[in-house]
Structures are given as C-alpha cells and as structure tokens.
Image (tube, rainbow, N blue to C red; front, side, top):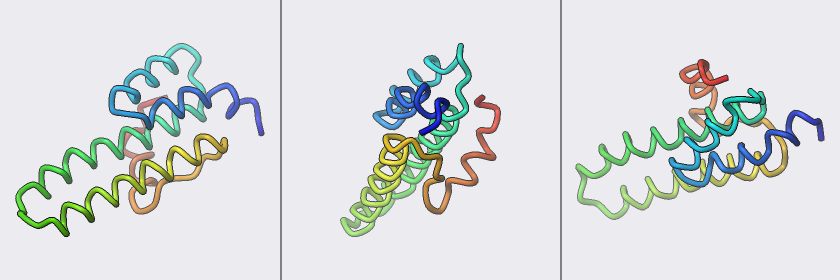
Length: 108
C-alpha cells in the first residue's frame, strides 16, 4: 500500500460514517491535502447529497418498495465506498462516482 493511502486512510474512513463525518474529514484533510482522502471525501459527499435529494423525491411516493429500494441503493454505495477506503483503494462508487469526482473537484 502506498504512503498516500496510508496517511489519508483515517480521514477517508471517517468521511463515510455520516454527513458530519464527511465535514470532519474535510477539515482533517484541510491542512495536509492528501489526494486519497480528498477522493473519498468527494465520493462520500456525493453519496450524502444524493441521499438527501433522492430521499426528498422518494418521500413523495407512499410505497414501501420504492423506499426499500432507495435505502438499499444508499447502503450499497456507502458500504462500497467504505470498504474501498479501508482497503486503501481509490475506486469510484457505482453509477455516480465519476460524476462526484467532477462535481466536487474543488475539494482538494
């Protein structure tokens, strides 16, 4: 494992814990600017923004199937991101990961 991943691993893992964890990870990474941590902070921020936007949309429907599908989707994205952070890998989350990297490219 490279040293960039090793030094940024804590911030990367914290980013996936909650939206507050993402904010904490951002400030943890603010001084050192670790590229590994920045990658995972962008991914986590994208997942949480997707959670809130898609959650608002899903709340319009009164269907347990749509609600469960939404939660399964979010849990899979968070789980995937967290596992890759723990393993020290920079893999984009499925479907939206590449977009998150573009949209939040100002997070360094």
